[in-house]
Length: 282
Image 1 (tube, rainbow, N blue to C red):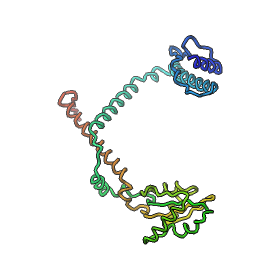
Image 2: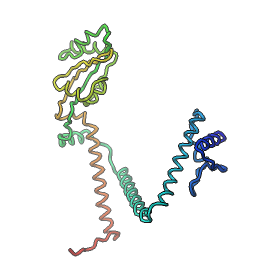
Image 3: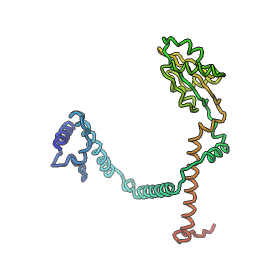
C-alpha cells in the first residue's frame, strides 16, 4: 500500500496534480478516484518510473472520461442530452439478444453427422468452388550447400511407382525441414505463406500449369511439390469443406430456432391477450 501511495504521489507530481486527500487520488465533480481503485493495476517487477507512468495514464484516462461527460452537460442542448430513448432502445436490444442466446443455447443440437454434411455438400456445390487452387503439398527446405542437394532436386517430385515413393521419402529425410500440412487439403495462400519470398498470386501462376517448383532462397532452397491439386473454380473436396459445412448447418439450425421463437411469441401474445392487432381501415 505504501509503495502504491508513493508511486501515485510521484505520478501526480509528474502530472502537476496536487489533489490527494486520505485514500483519494483524484476528483472530477462528484466522482472520486480512490487508491483502492488502482491497487491491482501495477504488476510485480515494474520499475518505479514505469509504474508511475502506468498510474498517470490510468488517472488521465479516468479523469478524461468524467471530464467529457461534464463538458457535454455544459455545452449540449437539452434535446441532445436527452438519451432516454437511446438507452431504452439499447436495453431492449440487449434483452432481446440475451433471450435469443439463451433459447439457442438450450435448444441447439450441435451434433452434425457425416451424412448430413455430405447431403449439404451435394446440394450446395456452387458454394464450394473457390477462386484459388486447393492442394495437398509437400515443401522440403534444404541448404544450398547440402551434399544431398542434387539428389533432392532430381527426385523430390517423382511420381508413379513404389520406387518413386521411396526416393521422395529419402529426399524428405535429407531435409532441414519438411512441411506437408498434415496431409490435409490447403488453399494456395497457405502454401505460399510457408515459403519465404513467395506470395499467393505468384504461387497461383506457378502451379496453374504444373505441380512442382523450386524457390531459391538466401542460403536455402524450397522444393515444393503438389501431390494433388484442385484447379481454380472446381468443386473443392468434401474434406476441405467439412468445417464450413458444419458451421453452415448450425447457422441454419439457429435461424430455424429463432424463427420458431418468433412464431411462438406471436401466437402466445394473441392467446394471452398481451398482443392486440386492430383492424385498420384502408
